[in-house]
Length: 213
Image (tube, rainbow, N blue to C red; front, top):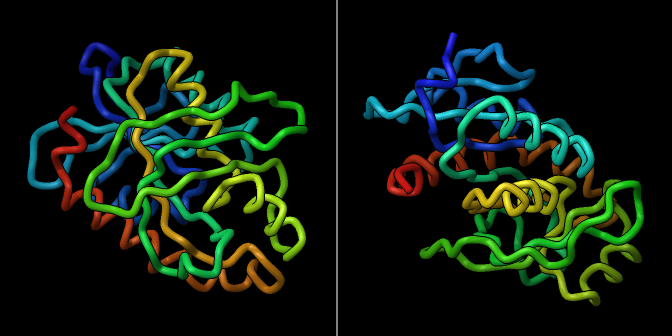
């Protein structure tokens, strides 16, 4: 079991176990014990420690889990990874994207602070993200979110970024496009999730410097 005194360490943040599984295997993650969904491990090929948190789905669950993380463990920085839907046909399934800023959809029982800028991440296309309270799998809602200025949609990223901003913790975000956020998108998402999750973990550990500051 890890001890808080052994840290601060970077933390990888995912919404679900399925998205996180390749990274858990790569870091040889073990449950930390301090917090549900928290794992500890080591960066592949390094002795450096790393945390991994699974928040659960939705902005409220993500925000609550992040605040619990910060209360339980010293964290040097956060990298949020996971899948997202594309709001524009030009952004095709399978692309990995760096998120330049995230926003929380209006409504719901969690009110966000507005657009949240994120730490730059070179080498990947830079996109904007909106996090919603309920899944988007219809063309009309997708069009409305796109018209409001977002490129991608998920349910957790903005809440993760918000919690980091509240605690002044650096936050970076990498999303893989799993579907087109329209009719039939749910099945497409589930079909693409395993491969995209592996691709996200490979991209992260290829950029090991992200985990050092």
